[in-house]
Amino acid sequence: MLRGVFYGRFLLRPSFDPHGMSAISPDTTAQLAAQLVSHIRAIGPVAVAFSGGVDSAVVAMAAYLAAGDDAVAVTAVSPSLARADLEFAIAEAARIGIRHRQIQTAELQSNSYRRNHGDRCFHCRDTMYSTMEALQQHTAGQQILNGANLDDLGDHRPGMQAAQQHHVRSPLIELNIRKQQVRELAEFWKLQSAARPASPCLASRIAYGVEVTPERLRSIELAEAYLRPLLADQSFRVRLEADGLARIEVTPQMIPLLADERTRAGVVAEFRSLGFRAVTLDLDGFRSGNLNQLLVPLGTAARQSEHSPDEH
View 1 (cartoon, rainbow, N blue to C red):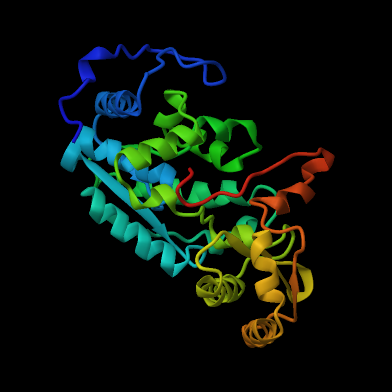
View 2: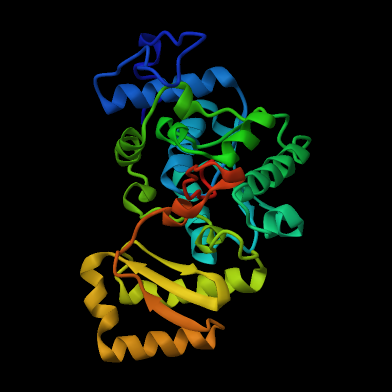
């Protein structure tokens, strides 16, 4: 483990430019890992918003090495979190060794969230951080951390606005750590999330303007659970468009499999049993966050990336 190694070699400057180059450029992943641990140690007791995804897992690992029992990983549980993702988060926290709490969040009680406009992620994160803050009495006032990395700053991300309003810190951004470096850190620490495909919240599958409901989230979850073994866990999405249309996105090499008559018939029957009116296969293939291409808030073109509970 890294405890006691390299930490004294790095001077963490009190300010930085998150859009510029890092003031410190470690030569190795081990040095970067040590830098992240040292940075979080200076923060003190922390609570990590934790989905089990690679970003939050790296922050949770560094937090555990930095603070031990003074660090806790907190997973927000709601209908927008797939059961498989919750189970993975529980297992990943156990592998890391960090204390783990599950909190029930109630974003679906918010009309602003359910209406599913371009600011949906703000209302999700606002609810999660508010719930975490309400637990401060049980977490000894720990500083909340998220898993946002430097590459997240280029997009329109309402969830980041919520983080700012709740004074949540983003240690990966504070150290100018990008997504590729996050994956290298995950591999360095042998985290299971290192090679796991991204798994944003289920609400990110619902087209903007289509109301988010528990029933729709559950249908999407079950539809993806049905496809997962067929697709050998490769990246894919089941998108819900208006009027109950399911749009399946898979990697191009998997398109012939779903177009095969026996597979196709089984998929259609299963999806219809889950309440989808019609089923389509997107020939463009899987594209993370492609629903955001149609997002034009307040008449101004903007982009909003898919988020996962770990982001942020």
